[in-house]
Structures are given as structure tokens and as C-alpha cells.
Length: 237
Ligand SMILES: Nc1ncnc2c1ncn2[C@@H]1O[C@H](COP(=O)(O)OP(=O)(O)OP(=O)(O)O)[C@@H](O)[C@H]1O
Ligand SMILES: [Mg+2]
Image (tube, rainbow, N blue to C red):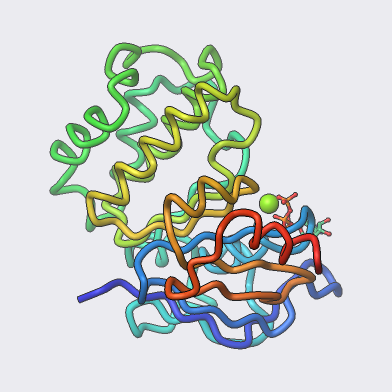
């Protein structure tokens, strides 16, 4: 069975301001999905609403045909929908090993803790070398590895990454992109927000351009637009 996320007419925001305006998208039918768009147009807000950190005002979010809109973040994690936030959200005083162990807290992930740890170390061998090092002493790239590794410890059915390469030096970014591609080859469908459309195209041929809290353009696999065509869509908005 393929893992699907169906978002219909979703409205959400902060205080009295709506950021998402009846946005609809389908994720999973074609495998990975890439989301891109200008700064401040609601990509992070969309991801935070999907994972229960923001309560939707209207609309539906169905994960594998189960309605999850309005559930707590914890309940959504138990369904296997795991979100790695934009920026560094790790506890600075924990070691790498402690962070990864925390990732195994969902009930559905506990039995697989050892196998998941082995898988994380295969994807990010550097983490094993620095197992007892505290997060506060890690580089940006290493922190991103810990964040994604911790998410993998939760046995995701679908993994959501919000700008995983933000602020990384080119070489580190390349390494991280290769690791993320490796995760998708293991069969975990990914939803990735990135400014780097080149990377998104490597990951998926199914992209959404988000503008003003709505889907401005959906690019489906059959369309196979190249990077320059996508850029002209982007800047044509
Ligand atoms: N906690 C908050 N309270 C009030 N407004 C917020 C809050 N978080 C974000 N916003 C506003 O919501 C809008 C959308 O922000 P969001 O972070 O979703 O954009 P984004 O597309 O992820 O941008 P970026 O590409 O810079 O990460 C922005 O105008 C932002 O100022
Ligand atoms: Mg964002």
C-alpha cells in the first residue's frame, strides 16, 4: 500500500491572520514531493499544520485515509507522519546518542529501536564517531544529520523535511542531499521544502510551487520540466 497525504481546502494561520487559503495538495501518489516558493508564503506554516503544531481553521488532512486534522502532534507522530522542523530545534545539552534514543519514543517505533539505530548509522556514519558529543558543540551539518536521524528513529511512514540544507556550506550540503536521496531509496516517502530546485528535481518529479498560501503551480511527473522552465514559472508569479 502506498502512503498518501491528501490535503483539501486547508485554511490556517496565526491570530486573526490566515496564511494558508483553502490550499489543496496530494502527496504520495507519485512518491516523493518537493515544495518550493518565495520566503514567507506559508511553506513552514503548511508543514506545521500538517503535523498538528497549528490548528487548522477549515479543511481536511487525510493520512492513509485517516483524518488527522485537529489531532495532537503526538497522535500524528504515532500515525508515522514525522516532521523535521526548519532550523535547529535540538536540545543543546543532549548527546547525539541521547537525541536518537528520544526519537524512538513513539510506541510504534520502540520494537525497531535497534534496527533503526543501525540504519541511521549507515546513512550518517559520522554520528557513530561522535556518539557522546553534545549537540551544542556540533556543526550545522552535523546537527541536521542528528535531526533527520532522530526522525528516522521514529519509524516514519512519511518524512517531512523543512529546508534541510539551509545555511550549509556547498560541500556539506552535497553530502546531506546524497543522504536524503538514500533515505528515499529505502522506501520512506519524503516531503521536502527546499529553495534548491535542482535538488528537489533529483528527489522528485512532483513539485508544488506555493505562493500566497496557495498552490500556484503543480508540476506532475509526466510534465518533466527542466530547471530553467521551473525558474521561469517561479519568477513569473
Ligand atoms: N508564529 C507566528 N506568528 C505570527 N506570524 C507568523 C508566525 N510564523 C510565521 N508567521 C508569518 O506567516 C507567514 C508565512 O510564514 P512561513 O514561515 O510559513 O513561510 P515560509 O514559506 O516557510 O518562508 P521561508 O521560505 O522564509 O521559510 C509570514 O508572513 C510569517 O511572518
Ligand atoms: Mg519556512
